[in-house]
Image 1 (cartoon, rainbow, N blue to C red):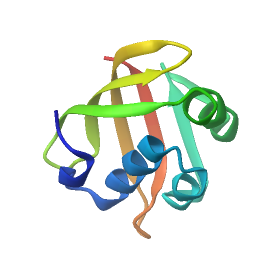
Image 2: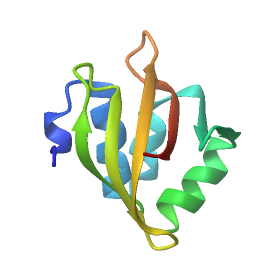
Image 3: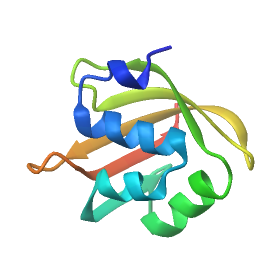
Length: 107
């Protein structure tokens, strides 16, 4: 496992830390105002998805591995709805240092 503190990209680190803390405010601060996302290849409404998959269901990311950039992760993701599953996460980081898009799905 890789600690969130050890993730090389600060934007991705902030995202993971916010998810694991269940901190909606920090989560939104880690994202650009126009951030987008997809789950298993389908674009989703980010606010609705985050509420359902993270905040109302106790979502948590245990990082298994990361690429050298820190923007591609393999994660054991767990929440109260789905249990634990191995997932892949890909992040696009905007010039302002915040996540502008993330894509997740089964690994």
